[in-house]
Amino acid sequence: MGTNDRQLAPERSCILTRRTAPKTELIRLALGPDGQVAPDIRAKAPGRGAYIGVNKAELEEAMAKGKLKPALARAFKDGKAVAPDTLADDIEAALERNALDRMGLEARGGTLINGSEKVEKAARSGKLYLLLHAADASEDGNKRLDQAWRVGGGDQRGLVLLADRTMLSSALGRENVVHVGLTDQAAAKRVREALSRWHAFLEPHATLEGGASAALAAENEDEGSE
Image (cartoon, rainbow, N blue to C red; front, top):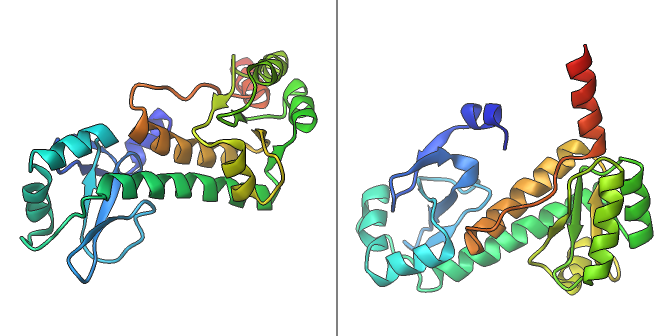
């Protein structure tokens, strides 16, 4: 998310740390009719919600030390709100599903391509906005496509996903998906944001590499020359 987007996005405070951040960078918790708290990744569930901005290890620590229960009681103004012991795992699963679903939507919309030759061709011609590699992709394959992306004006390397080829193939409804490219700027932004939330929850100190494309770089150069 760019600086301007961050400034415009509505903000909420993490109930555990009190840190304020854009809603899109936090994880919403919703209260079910049975009083059970569940992750609401897309922030669509009705009723009052509570937001957390911690990673999985921090959430598990807060739960182990008994800090989550009073924080939920304050947020929902209801001492009956109960978080399942599996909440951290539930959030991880929901973030994973959200990211893979997002990629599936882009695949069906025609803005996501896969296959080494197809991705390499698009990368070299400056038509990629985001390059992704499956977790079990070969290092040589990654390097070849990373180099193609650099030749096309992209970033130094693509993002190695937490998902392996089996997960990607299932999510996209295609066979043997190892390397993926996003050919539309808005689509790349949507996928990148979904992946960032998932990766940040599990690997808070990792960074998402890649993202700028040759096409975007060309746009910026044109703007600078006007």
